[in-house]
Image (cartoon, rainbow, N blue to C red):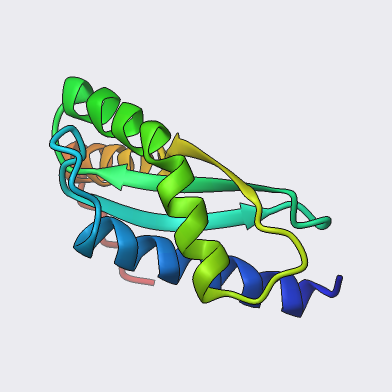
Amino acid sequence: MSDGRMRRVDEAVRAVLSDAIAKDLQDPRVGFVTVTAVKTSPDLRHARVFVSVLGDEQARGETLDGLASAHGFLQGRVAAELSLKHTPTLTFHYDESVDRGMRITQLIDNTPTHPRPHTDG
C-alpha cells in the first residue's frame, strides 16, 4: 500500500477513534484523552493507537486500562465506519512525545541567558 494511502487510513482510523472515545465511551476510567496518532501495519491487521492523557501517571494507567478494555467496542466502530479489507486489532500506547516536548520547553525556559559581548568591528 502506498505511503499516501497508509497516511489516509491512519488518519481515518484516528478520526473514528477520537470521535468514539469522546462521545460514546462510557468507561469511568477513561479521562480526557487525545488520540495523537495511529500507525497501521501495511497488511491492516494491527494498529498502534497513540494517546495523550491529561493527568498524572495513575490517570494515564487507568485510561490505558479502560481503552484496552474497550478495544472490541472501538474496533467495531472502526469496522462500521470505514471500508477496510481488514479491521485492525487495536493496541493503545501512551504518546510520550507531548511529555518530551514539555520537558524540552521547560529546559529552554530554565536555561540562564548570558548576554553576548558586544564588539564594535
